[in-house]
Length: 136
Picture (spheres, rainbow, N blue to C red):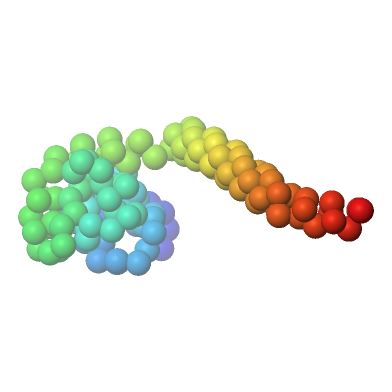
């Protein structure tokens, strides 16, 4: 389907129902929202990230409830929320995650080093009498 036809289809909908419980991101949600169509979804990781605080759509365990709440969201709010997901924002989020991972790696290495030094010190204490006996 040509992109302009898909955009017209999204724009003509009152709500996009995103029933997946397994899809981690859901590009289709952003596509619909960029056309001003609010989204109704289950409270799973991808939808909850995109529809944070009811911006652009609604999440609820019961999709009927989510649809009714999404219908109350002004279309321009859905569009504005979709605009938050751009390349600059995505790159900044990626870098923030890399920094967090690097901090975790440093903590992990320190813990490993401390544990290794502790075990080495214990092993040295246990082995030192043996070394002394064999050295005599």
